[in-house]
Amino acid sequence: MAKITQALASVALLVSCLSAQQSKHLKRDKSADGQQIFASSCAGCHGLDGRGGERAPNIAQAPAAQRLSDENLIRIVSEGVPGTGMPAFHSLGASGISEVVKYLRVLQGRGQPSVLPGDAAQGQALFFGRAECSSCHMIAGKGGFLASDLSSYGKGHSVEEIREAILNAGRDSNLHVKHATVTSDDGKQYDGLVRNEDNFSIQLQAMDGSYHFFEKTNVRNVEYQPGPVMPSNYATTLSQGELNDIISYVVTAAENNNMAAGSESEE
Figure (cartoon, one colour):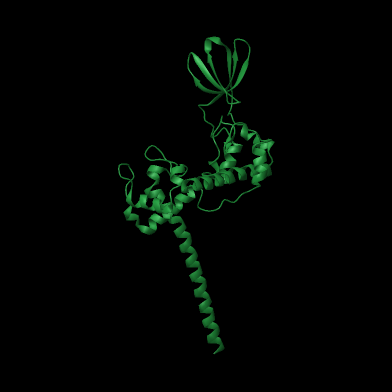
């Protein structure tokens, strides 16, 4: 009798283990469903990252798309948008549409809480202090405006993507933006970014944000600075911990900006 009881217990344990593994496998497969459906049904127009292309808009980073409720997104995917190139996807079924919306939230940076590698408060101090990020970039209405506003940047980019952008500035640098020093006829020098230029004139935005327009007949010299506008030496001027702090601040600022936008839309 004892042997039978032991055998039954072993069988029960085996069944339990197999059920747990099957459940885990199903959950893992289901988590990938949204990505697979998005890749086959949506990426052709919106791109694999959801950031749009020639045929459809950016639905990962655009504030209008981020503020839509899940219910609205489900309706749009299901019924399409009349008068546009967005078709209805009834064939995906309710569960398939729901998984697509869940995956879109991941692309928007809202799928799961971000794991911060450092201290956001220390990162803020560095951003507006020694690292001098704010001399060009703005976050939450504070900082410079020569470069892109980073208020929402951390919402659509992973920790590693942000790290890569900081350490390898030249890789994603806008090659159409030139950094130049203009020397006028009276010997004054103006350093900044070239915003417009033709054969007869050049418009420069100085580092303090002011604009200066020059006719080239009144310019002594224009010296174009090589390399990206963004410093490329952060790997040596910032420690690993300081870099992690700045990344954490950028991510946290984006999350706070998203919460503020949500509150405004509700009002």
